Length: 610
Ligand code: ZN
Image 1 (cartoon, rainbow, N blue to C red):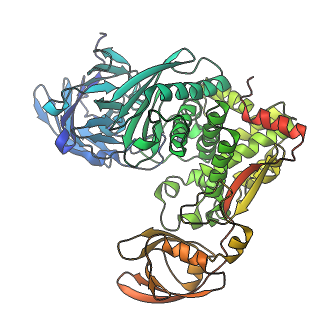
Image 2 (image 1 turned 180 degrees about the vertical axis):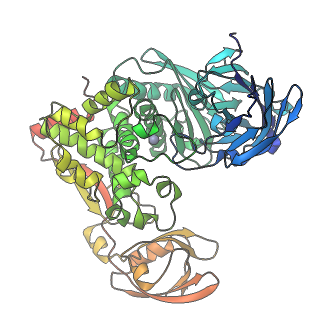
Image 3 (image 1 turned 90 degrees about the vertical axis):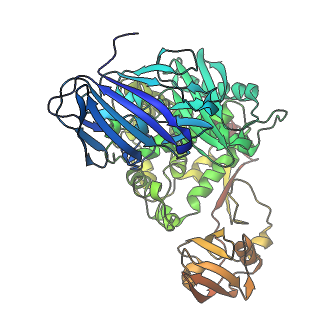
């Protein structure tokens, strides 16, 4: 082992039952002026100020001569008193958030991001950081192992031991899983890939390995081999109900429904498994787009405050576009299944009037206070930079295909981003994507992109999809859970007969809570508000999904009396039902498409290598 760097940590899962990690940080030498320590307020990839330091419950400092004072300076900084010689900080961190963004510990497993556990020492961030990850002493945890891509200095593969990052940024980009996970490996493009699954599950490891390999290779082929890391780890937390992922430089932390993992003996791609593969595809694509090709606003990261950029649509939207495209390009799903996914994405965009009020650039910029802090007014006020960003990427892709007569595509823009920004570490300037699109096409795209990137127009996907023989169709939601993507079951007469309230709901024990009241809808016009609990419709009790179902069974224009509690006051509203908006989208292949159309479609859905 090389010489210990000035800053090193011992991370001990000391009390799994109380969800407490004990951390010992050693810094040498201590500075005679006092030393500042800080913890990030947010974690890259998740744009919300989370104030991780709030979970530090006890902290003390000492030197060889004895204890020294440590004071809190602000929400995430501490300062130790002036001292001589090596300095040791000891602190405890409460870790009881089962998410990919923070830290978690109990008798079944431990997971942490160093953004939650490892204080940075000001002035030392660019040097090496060594971490000894210690096994828990609790006998219930006797068989635990460790999965992480943090470079290992000492200890057996999957064992507890000593690890080292070359700087603080690297330290916080390798989350750590510990427990009795299932572990297996596969190779993609000659690079070792690992999967570690925590939680109860019955995953078909062989099939998952086979499917992940083709997805990874599809993305690697597009950007060019070799991939930008020498190993990769999918860390999966399988739970009863959950969904999410966070991208890292050589790993990803995922949370999913255990039933979405491929089950032994089943060969079809269920919609749950398709969603899980889409999530893996998404986080893997981030290896290039956002982990290495970064907005200038993130180079370097400023981790104690919001880092504003209008470009999240490019980093999350383009990634969302390619995550589904990766599934069809790798042959795991067919065109029909792929078009269903695009239809669902479009339905997420069209189902809210917020898209007419917030641009994609503004959605990116305000992610910190709006997208990540959605309230009851969100559908009326904001648009998702993931969903509309994916439609923007689709539109830009098909625009390039159209302008270059099929010679170029968004793949060429991604490869330029990779060589100019990813491989060089130079951040992408605000509005920097357009210049690369111009370079690829030889045309100025300003008039094309401005309306849907910087203004609130819809991306012109109907017109552009016609080029590849795909029709976009709009219809109303048939029920509360209708996510679009398919033609639905209704005939035209059913559509004409349906009434609509313009609400989203959640079932309570007694009654139905209005979680969202949509602008322009019947409930809004009648004075109902988000938070109201509807208990009766035309004098009859309502529960669960009945509210929408009953409105659908009554025609538009019908007047209904609704009783609802606002706080503890019972109120009466007369609601005039409307026709449901045609805001669910599905795409279908146009049977009359000519040979040119079919050729363009074929080229769109397959990887166009350089
Ligand atoms: Zn993402």
